[in-house]
Amino acid sequence: MIKVAIINGPNLNLLGIREPEIYGTERFEDFYERLQERYFQVSMQYFQSNVEGELINFLHSCIGKVNGIIINAGAYTHTSIALADAVGAINIPTVEVHISNVLAREKYRKTSYISAKCVGSIIGLGLEGYALATQYFINTITLQ
Ligand code: DQA
Image (tube, rainbow, N blue to C red):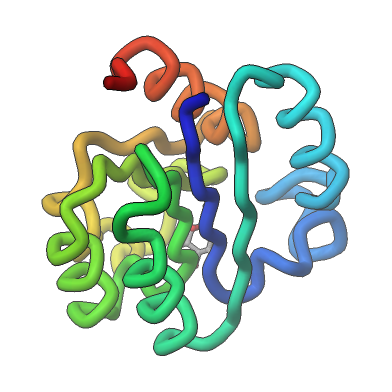
């Protein structure tokens, strides 16, 4: 079975109540339940933290355990070389997801340190971005 870890960074625990005009009205936990039902053939793990070091530790803990990672690093996307280094270090295919279209927002959101370490990025497609990233892993990972 394909194993995928989904990692959400700071403030994404507040999805559903946080700026709903930008991020929508659905809680991530509710979306995640539906995602697991939709992709029952994938074994998923979910981790969220508001703490940079905890996100890095979790990325390290993924070594040898998962086939793919989906990460929405929140604002750390635009600031954290350490998090980008961690993605680069673990050698696990990683897809970057952003719910909002960061390229259409403030200037400081246009830079992502993480993008270059990822196989690709899905931005601006709402929570559906996590589903598309999951589908990418289903289509591309062949288990030995
Ligand atoms: C976000 C975009 C980031 O700029 C922001 O800091 C977030 C959420 C997104 O999913 O659209 O926390 O990553």
